[in-house]
Image (cartoon, rainbow, N blue to C red):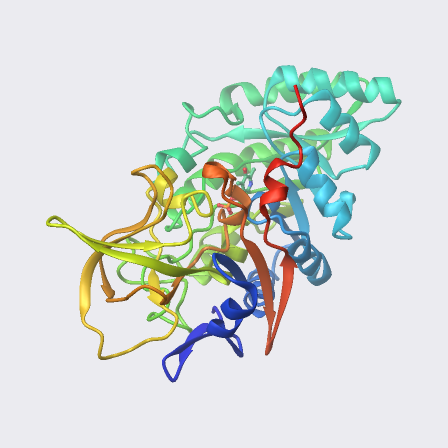
Length: 429
Ligand SMILES: *Cc1c(COP(=O)(O)O)cnc(C)c1O
């Protein structure tokens, strides 16, 4: 359930009028709903109550320190992919002992930083990385807790850039080699085997691929449990969310939508995976990112111009692909809705585009939207995950501000960049 809805044709986040928020903080502006994030966390947590489990939020989906603080408060651990993300978690008051460190390219500096802070586990993606972790740990006089990331070679049926569990992907270690590598790990002096990990991809909207991966991996987990007394099995993240019609399909069934191929509810996901994991004898870790924050955020922007050509109608807004890159990078779909709805406005077909000098700079193509004019505010929905965290300064555009709504209050959680910020780190050569 997300907390964006119309009240008398005005778009609200929780009990806050978004037009007012835009007036106070300007546009483009990311706005997040506190209630939505905590609600999603609690729903997933309680749906999994039959399992000994831990939810480790994937920080890369949205790494604002205030959101990390909120998630730490409700009890989340964290899945991190860089030293910078660990720094953010610690800054937010999160505990390194609840952090799993993923990624195919950890540097010695990052490994050392994570060892100093005693992370829960390094999720290891290659033989060379395993030996590097052992060597860094030895230098520091520490023992590194490790899990090997297994690539189960299953098709996650998602966009090719966010599929990670096929043998062609750079991630993880093949099932055919992983047990041998565990044996090698067991012989190393400065690592301790603590778990098994897998993550097959992102925005997965059916339970089939998860089931397929688990069916392949559960027997392995049981063997490793008996042999090395491993403590956890991390099944990764990847639970998909509804991007289409998230507003109409509303408020109750936001996660499932008949127009999405094979839309999956959280209950369906849990119903499919829990039976396979029950009685596994180790703690189950989940690493959801998008699921927790995706539908908890919108990107507010203002229409600058409407341009009618012989071919098309373009609605040019003040947010660009540098602020939200999902459409350009993954062909990601986002609803675009007016902040002030006017039922008398005609429905037109238009491209909603940004000001960046790239033809890939669009939010919607040939989309039926309520017609708008310069000065109108629009909301790009479902922008809470992989939105701000992937934003850049391309075209020397200052990064947008971020606001967290809590009931009737809107709190600034990151100020808008200014022009001086753009050149702050440049030095005379
Ligand atoms: C990106 C990532 C996740 C989170 O993926 P979502 O689709 O956002 O849930 C979890 N685990 C690992 C290892 C990842 O790389």
